[in-house]
Structures are given as structure tokens and as C-alpha cells.
Amino acid sequence: MTVRHATCRLLGALGVVWAVVTAVFVALQALPGGPARALLGPRATPAQIRVFELAWGLDRPWWVQYAAWWVHAWHGDLGVSYATGQPVAQVLLLAAPRTLALAGLALGGGLAAGIAVALWQAARAGSRGDRATAALLGALYAAPPYWVGLGLILWLAEDWRVLPAGGDQPGAVVLPAVTLALPVAAAVARYLRNSVGTLPAEPWWRAARSRGLSAGRLWWRHGLRHGAAPVILCVGWLAPQLVGGSVIVEALYNYPGIGWVLWQAALDRDVPVLLGGSALVAVFTTVTGALADLAAALVDRRLRR
Image (cartoon, rainbow, N blue to C red):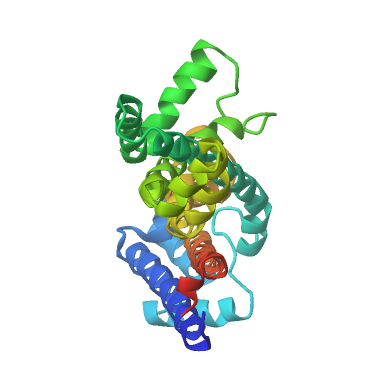
């Protein structure tokens, strides 16, 4: 990865953060009623709404509010929550460890399952099991996380009662992690399967087999190394989907992470929390993508140009 490429990635990351925050700000400004009406309720008088707007600086033109948010954000001040009166940075920092734990479990579990399934498929290329697994993976990748989560709740939490359906109790992270890990596993398996599917036709593969090396050893030592760079890049573009899916999944399971905080802020039209949370998610997404590019370049020399 050259300096020029790194600079372009940095500028692109800044552009993504700016675009996300701007889009959220514009969308919130276009909502009818504004945050004052949402927080004070439909019975709030015009005088009460006016006092609220004066107290929070909402009486200023929108472009002044927009510029002021960026100035304060540059100095680490993301504002104060309209609903709770807490600093937005504090609200997000309290929720961040739970979301990171959830995303880490989902990503790690999805990667392990996806790699195992892909190598199993590649070793049985063209068989009925390979085709049936490919169809199942396509369905899992396309399935909305909301419906997958509902199915897991009904099956494992309601019928079998082996795991809690969410909340803040022991084991509550398992079902949300599984819900997010299934599409990750499906994507990784499909991507890796396509990358290593032609390896048995390579001359070096046939030569290794003729020398007595087992197929399993070849797949795990050489097949996985051959497909490492594509898998790392796959993780990079899965990160935004994982973060976006966590909002829905955390709201579904009532899991108190950043996604749940953003969901509650959207219901309350809590503009500072939505802006700060969106900026944090955008930064996380772009940093993850950049790290995936760097890791892939370290693994595969062809990507270092």
C-alpha cells in the first residue's frame, strides 16, 4: 500500500464521515414537528416549544447549527442528549463495549463457520451436498436479520428455553451474535468457496497429492492461505453490514449497545445522539475497511501495488 493510496483512503474516509453526518442532519431537519414536539409531546404549547428551542439553540438557522456541531465535534464535544441530559460521548462510550463484544463474537463465529463450510464444499465440488449448501448459504445471506432473529427467539428462547431472548442478563449476547453471524458465515463461505474451488486442478496440487499429502492437509494449509486475502477483503465490506444490522438486532433483542441507543434516539428524535452515533459508526466502518485493505496487502503481495 503506497503513501498515495493511503492518502486517498484517508480522504475517502473523511468524505464518508462527512456524508453520513450531513445526510442524518438533513433528514432530521426535514422531519415534521422537530425534536421539541417529539420530546415534549403533542400537547406541548407553542410557548413550551419556544423555550425548548431557545435552550438548545434550535432557534438558529439550520446551517449555523450544522457548522456549530462540526466545530464542537472537532474538539471532542458531541453535544448533550435532549432526552437524558447526558453528554453524547458518555452515552456512546457506555454502550460501545457491548456492541464491540457483540460484533466481535458475530465476526469471529461467522468467520470460523464460513471458512469451515467453504473448505468442506470445495473438497466436494459439484456434489449434491455442495449444491444444497450453496443454496442454503444464499438464503441465509439474503434473509433479513429481523426475521432471522424472530425465528431464533421463537425456537431457542420460547420453545426450548435454552437461551435468554435478550436484555441485560447472562448469555443475552448469544442470540444476537448468532443472528449477526449467520449472514457473515454465508458471505465468507461463498467468497472463499469461489476463490479456492479451482485449486484441485492446479499442477502443484496434483503433484502434492501424488506424493501422498492428504486432501485435508492441503485444504487447511494451502487452500486457506490461497483464499486469505479475499476473505480479509470480504470482512472489510461486511463491516458496514454488520454495524447496520446491529441496530436492528439490538433493538429486536433489547440489547443495550450502540444500535439500541441509536434506535431509541430515532424514536425520540434526539438529534445530538443520532449525529454523534452516526459519526462514530461511520468512523468505525471506514477504519475497518482500511485495516482490511492493509491486512490483505500484507497477506497477498499482488495487492501491494
